[in-house]
Length: 293
Ligand code: C5P
Image (cartoon, rainbow, N blue to C red):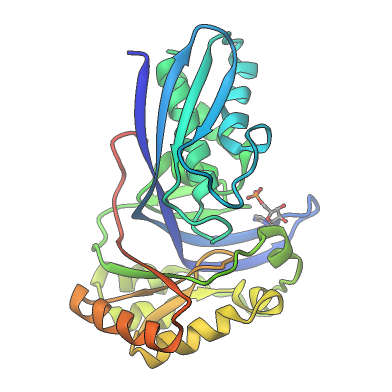
């Protein structure tokens, strides 16, 4: 086999609490992330020389150049750590919005590690891939696992959550993106931090009201210092009768959970009436995909 196509999924943060600031500049956190069926499509093909070449089908505004792209970095790290002298050609079709808090770049990086390991026949196990993935970014280990998980540390300590209900999700993308370091630079730690346990119970029961009451994203206030879109979307989701909604990650996307897809469609019409500049994505939570560990 010398080619592989991977659909790299987006994520949302159902819970994100900041526990403290670390000496390395990162924040200690507890977050519950969940993959959704919104994807980047990546096509990998082996090269006989050692080049790693990334091509985009269609220009994506805001996507880093090849040399700064996490996909290229992921494959170069694999080459460096294993001494592999083969190269890779990657074609990417972006479906996940950029600077959106949906983890697109991290998901692409995880897909690249998995593809490199398979196509170059490196034989790394999941623990070795997880270790490498943490060097690329705090959210990359989560995407090696996929599905739903609690992530701790700076995000790299992943505990998968099994057998939760699937639910319809409406993701709203405002006409701006937000920079993760900029949002984190405005954040503060709460005096009393919340635990994700009530959310996990509510998810198991599939109770939308209880889920809404136990969701939190501690980065919302920080994101509001950078852009007023978070507050605008919160008001719009409230007015659209959505019971469980918040910012995803460091934004700029905002999402709501619904009991069924009819309620989701009704809310989306109301949202667009109030905020016509929003781009809406109809999604669902998903389990682990075939390529994930
Ligand atoms: O790990 P990643 O490269 O995705 O992080 C981007 C930026 O987000 C970091 O440089 C840091 O400013 C911030 N961050 C943080 N604490 C985390 C994760 C990210 O402060 N746990």
